[in-house]
Image 1 (cartoon, rainbow, N blue to C red):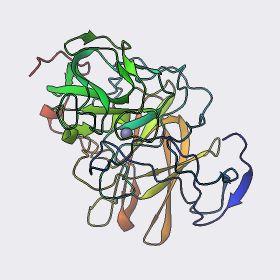
Image 2 (image 1 turned 180 degrees about the horizontal axis):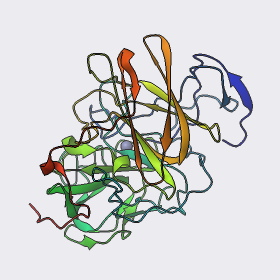
Image 3 (image 1 turned 135 degrees about the horizontal axis):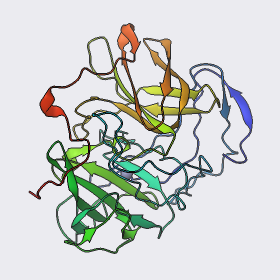
Image 4 (image 1 turned 90 degrees about the vertical axis):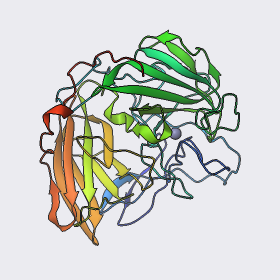
Length: 361
Ligand SMILES: [Zn+2]
């Protein structure tokens, strides 16, 4: 946010911040990914960074890359990382830390396109054209071509562009795990090749439905399908000393609150992040234990104040983020916040602590 001036922004002032490159809705009506609708409102008087002096509106894409949000990030916990039997941080980041040394950007899982009801089925990681893309875990390449979405090899109008899919050597709850890497400028692997964690598989690009160079990353199970994605922020190991906030937010009738803004403010640094709950649409899935509709990773350990607006009232609570762990909360309409974890699932749910090899289907 270099060059921004500090100003006081009061209730319901919409602040549009950096325009990040992202996946874009495709003209033919489907895309893996969402366009981020900009940053948002303050529920009360807070210090926000003001936007820079507006530049003339440009129709030309792609947009400039994002400014780093943080200049330094600790190394990741070793994978597989799981301090609770319900967690499954099995993957590393597919872009090297010395290339993109800041938290995952705001094009998150479950976001909604400007138009239509198409949700984002992965996370977008901004990186310059040509940045190496690495395997997030060991496995066998099962797709390396255009046409992943349409399942039509060579289809250059496919929204995923040049994409790679890996079937991993380990599974989850006895089911097959896959990761997907989309929009690349070049693929440097072939179907059938076995990759180890960190092996290069391609280069960042902007092929397919995008507004600029970035990597679209997905986690899928049990099938390598657009309809079987899960939030990658629950699968990528957090940086050491940092944790992950997971929430389930519903109305009084247990109906999920969609696209609800939640303000997450560090009580230590006063830094505030805004996140929206998942949008609707059938393409997203919820973790079998958390049944979440909000995930915010890359939070340094500490106390945070959560604020949201429900029924025309600001609702607040405090949560503590612990190193390498998930902090869970629920919000249920006028009952408000609760930090009780979900009850233990029945025994057959429990995954093995260490991912085990599962035979390829
Ligand atoms: Zn995307």
